[in-house]
Amino acid sequence: MKANPNSPLPVSYEDVAAAAARLSGQAHRTPVMTSSTVNARTGASAFFKCENFQRMGAFKFRGAYNALSQLTPQEKKRGVLAYSSGNHAQAVALAGRMLGVKPVIVMPMDAPPVKLEATRGYGAEVVVYDKHKVDREAFSRQLAEERGLAVIPPFNHPHVVAGQGTAAKELIEEVGPLDFLLVCCGGGGLLSGCAIAADALSPECKSIGVEPELGDDVVRSFRTGTLQSCHNPDTIADGARTHSMGDVTFPLVMHYVDDMLSVSDPELLKSMFWLWERMKMVVEPTGALAATALLEGKRDFKGARVGVIISGGNVDLRWAAQQMLKS
Ligand SMILES: *Cc1c(COP(=O)(O)O)cnc(C)c1O
Image 1 (cartoon, rainbow, N blue to C red):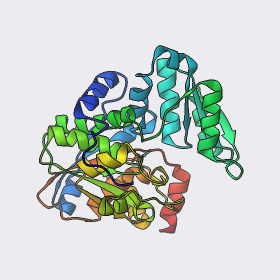
Image 2 (cartoon, protein in one colour):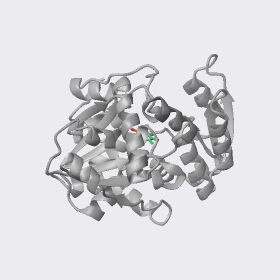
Image 3 (cartoon, rainbow, N blue to C red):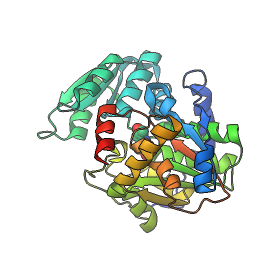
Image 4 (cartoon, rainbow, N blue to C red):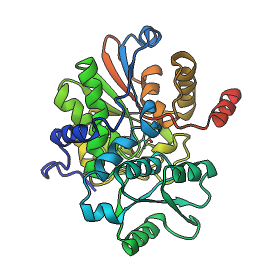
């Protein structure tokens, strides 16, 4: 698929602003952190937007809440379905509970028990499937049809993208215009939403997406202008193991994003520990993608004002400590 530059884009800044109004008082206005150590090391003025402190520990709450709150009364009554074993599941579960919409979450039966429990803990019905026997999407589609549930995708939906963009809107409103905005990227929902906000609020700002090297489908799609995919990328950045962008995020990324960078898994771990030790922040591997591009000097940011989205903090600390001991 090639992005058609003539077809209208599916999300505008007005959609991001409307999402911000819906999220007001519902999502946390997360803190922006600065670090003189980071600035000394990189020569930049860096502003970290800390979505690891968002409700349920990641920005995904923004998109899920924005999408669920725009369902029709009938759709709300019937309930919603999401398939994910990660942050999107918990985001839909929590937003569903807040809005009185019954969430059904489809997860593989061998998902980590803590994740199954956490999702049930938010009040969701968890339906498990055998990933060796059935295709997740086909299984979910059939279940949604049988029960009349609205499917809430993790990134490829205009309301989800608009919700994610509110993170950058808050950041720029708080710190002023930026030269660069670095954004963690999986399927491109957060990246496209944030790039739309940056384009409207800080027109000179260059939005840059950061992906894991092992799952660099967006980097390749961006360079070639043709949608590329990755099959089950084996990266520790589990939130960025997406197969490919979708028909909503791909044209938005092509239109609004200025560049894409990638970082290796060892680099990700290094910056995850660095954020942990120096900035006292627990950040999950995927959540550290954008910060890693800055800390590892993937581009020269000297003298620039750089916004960095820290996207989430849901990491098993026992696992992280083991990785630290191994490194
Ligand atoms: C989902 C997720 C991402 C990737 O977001 P996309 O909108 O799919 O690009 C990045 N970081 C965290 C913590 C996530 O949960």
